[in-house]
Image (tube, rainbow, N blue to C red; front, side):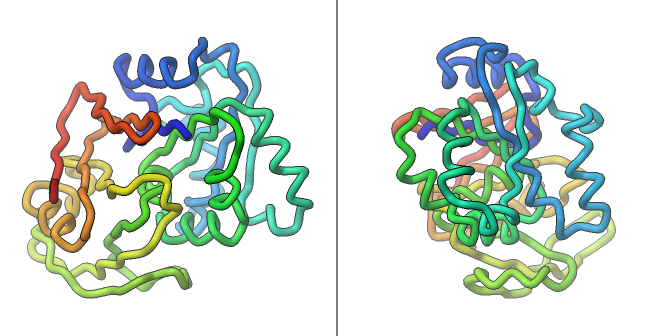
Length: 244
């Protein structure tokens, strides 16, 4: 499988070029499926799921000019005959996985059977992740939460970590979990983005130190390109590798 893991989608020409190189043909000749599932635990989740489809969310993904576009809803898959939805994956060139809560998304990867299908699919599918959609493919990842978790039962452990923020020191619950295992490193998206203070400066180091795998912290203009196990950083911005 080929992967392009981002914080905010296809945000610059370098990342777009990386996507086209993975696809092996122009975007307008490729079929894609979009997975919005990860945003549902948030207040306003239905709106967040619709915005990228309607082109109302910064960071190009669905609106890149694909030949065809479909919706793959992971929570619905257990109620559908497996050969039906697998045939849709076999007929597509790219799987576009939106952000949200990575624990919730990883849970539905497993519950829906998508993880098993992706690891055994006899097709050169390109997986494109955004934020949580990039995090959930790791064998092991971590995330910070201000409030209680959303009923995710695949959490491996949790502990309080104090992160420095402009508002002062705020304790967060840090949770580690097992993801789909498509890559053997973890991601911290939105690196050095002030809207995500947990991923800024020394906070990213605290985060990475809790994970027993290499950790790439990537900003909005950086992506991780994975081809046949080979990892390449594609960037017009800032990134850092921890636990190398």
